[in-house]
Length: 253
Image 1: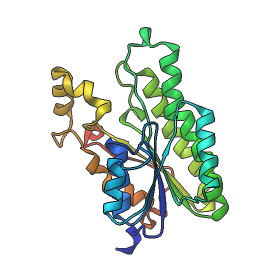
Image 2: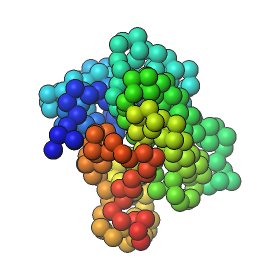
Image 3: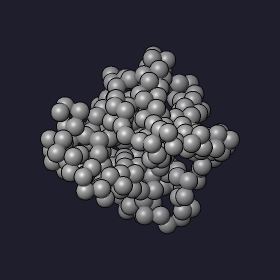
Image 4: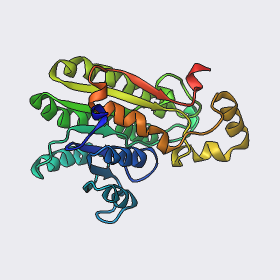
């Protein structure tokens, strides 16, 4: 179906080095998009994600950016323009999580999580979105979370940041939908990545999590291939301000 074809499109994917971000980058490349990959520690050449994208016949351009540093995010956005990139798709996936009870959740932990997960997302969306609005087309996709809807345990900064991502998605959609720019989000459930390793390694928590998931398993990065291509393609042209939950049924339970 041609409405899912991304040939001729360019997609920025932040946090693409591993996990969900890498899965999203690979899926977009499989659908035909060239990839601009961004991560705090992405290799300039020869990364695994680059090899995978190139193997699919698409180009890969690597950038590094410290998303906890607002100045670095603005510099990255300016560099994109200097290098002649006019991306059609922006996937705001980079994120971090710090696990500490609220009484021990120090200001530096709070600030880092909010800066990486929320402030940098707005800054990059604003800078890239400005060009999309001018051109009259574009797709922006945030990575939200189950904690966009729930409070979580011992992750107050993360929960606050992901709740903010849900509202930011809607706010930008309200402004930019009239200009041909679709803004939506994907909310992953419990996915087997580095971010959830502590939960996977805790027998009691892992058991309680799996007992609530109707599908009976942890998700994988490959589970996001269909959702990300849908939201990045013409198939979602009338979808605005939505948070698509990919959780094996957790929220329905």
